[in-house]
Image (tube, rainbow, N blue to C red):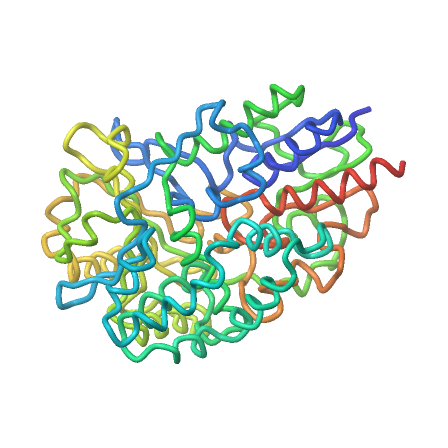
Amino acid sequence: MLDAVVVGAGPNGLTAAVELARRGFSVALFEAKGTVGGGARTEELTLPGFRHDPCSAAHPLAVSSPAFRGLPLERHGLEWLHPELPMAHPFLDGTAAVLSRSVGETAASFGPRDAGAYRRLVTPFLHRWDTLVRDFMSLPLTALPRDPVTLARFGLVGLPPSTWLARRFHDERARTLLAGLVAHVMAPLNGFATSAIGLVFALAAHTRGWPVARGGSQAISDALAAHLRELGGTVHTDYEVKRLDDLPPARAYVFDTSPTALARIAGFGDHYARYRYGPGVFKIDYALDGPVPWTAPEARRAGTVQIGADSAEIGAALRAASRENRAPDAPFLITVQPSVVDPTRAPEGKHVFWVYGHVPHGWTGDLTDAIERQLERFAPGFRDRVLARATAGPPELAARNANYAGGDIATGAVSGLQTLLRPKLSLYPYATPHPAVFICSQATPPGPGVHGMPGHNAAKAVWRRLRQT
């Protein structure tokens, strides 16, 4: 009998399997698709030689992750590449605010009235980032805080809505960049703990950067899988699990799946019936015959570029997708241009470009024209650079990755108490009604992103049980 079986080879399932194997447990991992990866994959979606990331592309949380930083992933081929600027947010006048590794450069891009306010906001946390991120991402009850004072101070700043945090700034440049950071998790700007979301992304950029993985996000998953095999674990692909009886006998079962899928597979009935899914996204991967012709020079040097004319436009786009059940007329866009720093991603002189906008949950329309009209506002002539595009709305995203129910790439709404307490109100979020079954997907704390911490935290709960039995 195996000690543990893990279902789902996304970053969290892989991390959970690695953590258990590192502690001497026998582990087998089962994945429905033909390759490992989940939300961290790389494929030729458009033309030969153009390597695209179907979901995640830039990785500010992965490079800061306590789980990943404790593993020898570089030995298994993972290499982080840092663009000259982690992120830029261009404006219609041809200028841009930036999120730089340098706090000073970032503050200067906001203008003189807000430079000091920004420095005062981030400086108390910069030199304590590694400890803070461990405390922040290990909660709840998986480890005692190493620096409870800093964590409490962060909570005082981060728990209020981001609209409160925006009041620290006089001008629209800083407010717009902050609104864009919050929108990465598709959260309404006035939601609970949205200040923390924006602040985490900003601090991550200043301390560890917003890199891409050389060759694509698949390199993260492949490195985790290689390390798992090195530790004696086994990986089985093309193996769809429809019920617990499909799996070999084990002392524990760990699911990197949505709560809905777990309830169906394990026969938990309506145990997760109150779990809420959030808006979906409409994503386009482009093959381009040259770099994106951004008007703002800063955007040409950035790995990630946020698109939204101002905080009001960003807020309106989020409300349309999450509350008004319609696609926004001017969608907020998150874009990544990996080939700015990684020439292996496209043929010489060509580029890959990654973009998505928010749409209602399960939306079946086509946002291509609205996305490209929005891009043309900040990069005139963009359409002339397009060689090919691959589009994916909520139905296609859910078909590629079953965890993305209704196109929700966060595997659950990041709003209200569910921002922190997911998938249920519980002190033990990785446990389920069955004592031998656990959940480790991004539907559990600390939530969405490619960082492996839900898997890391869930593994702790599993090995505590295995030591008791």
